[in-house]
Amino acid sequence: MAEKVRKLYRSSHDKMIAGICGGFAEMMSIDSTLIRLGVVFVGIVTAVLPLVIVYIIAWIIIPEGQKD
Image (spheres, rainbow, N blue to C red):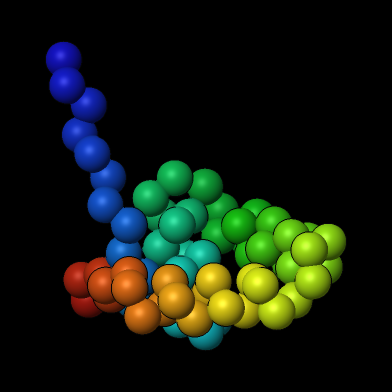
């Protein structure tokens, strides 16, 4: 059987800034706090600027999900 492809959307209800972490957590069916902690860890390890640039690009490219 073919597995249904899950699309990535920015969350319209689980968001702190743009809903990117919330949308990714919904797509992966995990807690959004774990995603946010992972993003903070990666930001600290790699420097903040690359993470900010990627986040802004994702904010522009990823469409917002359906309003519940």
